[in-house]
Image (cartoon, rainbow over all chains, first blue to last red; front, side):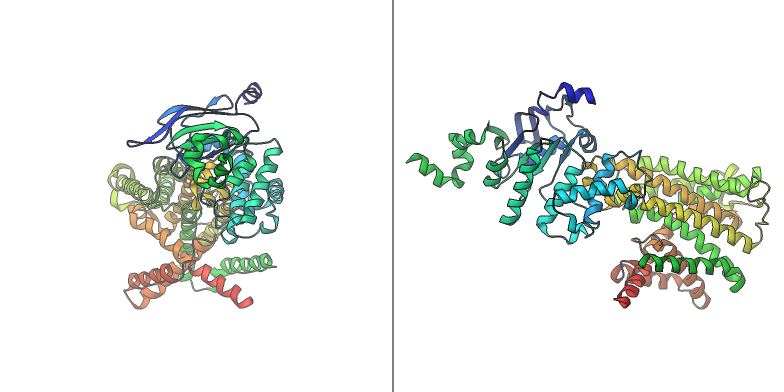
Length: 268
Length: 315
């Protein structure tokens, strides 16, 4: 474990090579190549059906790729089961809230922490009384300003708080690579701001490498170091926000509609 | 405050159970024994059903193998009863490990059908393998000796046997309760609600399901081991698929969301059966109506509904 992380400290955290996934005759993702450097935040954008979620599902183990390889910290993770990939240090959130609604907010985090601490060691600990686990859960909840809700049932808290809890559960597994799937989807502008600030501060802490899909372009351009634009399952462009913004094909294929005003300004 | 009330109620109930042979009619010693054993059986089932969210229809297999193990040991080896209990738990766990290994990979109705199928196979073995199991007659004619080496409590006395059952069930229930409250129990509850999220947290859901299934098998084996000397026989009926339905009914009747729900359900089941069959043959009809009402209107079971009502009165 230690030597893989140290030897690959300078290399990419995630290496995607020629990754494809077909559903019947339809190629949902085809021939994606991407290197994600340590502590980088890469946003993946593209219209609905561009293959972003399929790509996520392959990286996190929900789907097996048809062809291609995935390497995490120098280790081949292609086609591994989700729990194995998670245990190696890759954790993901979901587009639709995917939390344990009947449990308290703190218990949600405790589930992920229990996973982190191994199923052998703390197996028969009385969960609600395992002090270190509770403290860790509280620290994390505080970091996401969810402390006040710790004892509320997760199903009863607001939508925005559920999205934040989703991120808390992801972070509780102490991942080095975090995949966020539309973290601000359905949020109010205030909630979006809160999440954007959170992602930024997490990225600046230097503990995480991020892969983010997002529809809100303000969020994307606010947090991303680089952007991968997908279109019909293929990579259209990979580059810095500025490069992507100015790329003619991107403007035509994707940003065109949303950034029409900008386009006119540049043209004039 | 709330915890104190719960503890006091539990202590009173326990004291009542201990005193039962001296205060209740003789007949209730038998009913009490049956309630305790079936309650443990149902509680072991509820670890799989209520906590982990897997509807097993083959739970009688583990109960039955515990009963057969005990009857065979008492008949051929004449070991102390405590040794029978330990062996029965091991037999239940081992069988559950094998059946579980093949079943937990499936979900929902497929899991239910597969456990039902395995349960029927175990029944068929007990029914057909006459040289060992004595076929449809089952194994009878065994005698209870010492409880543990050198400890002779005259287990043949129904009141004594009742107290032994009470002691074993209380200890077993306490262990089961700790398992449910542990980190392991937390993960099981999480799996019931959202297995996929659990696997994305880095946990092997199948392994947890198998572990829960095996532990449940051990405690079902223990309940079978207590039942065989009580009935004085280990018969194929104890392995029949209809026996697998009993813990399902008891858990739903009592309330699957509560640790003590299945015990409560077993008490309601056994007591009502004995009272109702006293003046009508339509016990099954009454049970059917009750279950339908439970599922339609009182999802939290008798215990859950009672607790809601008590708490409502305090507010």
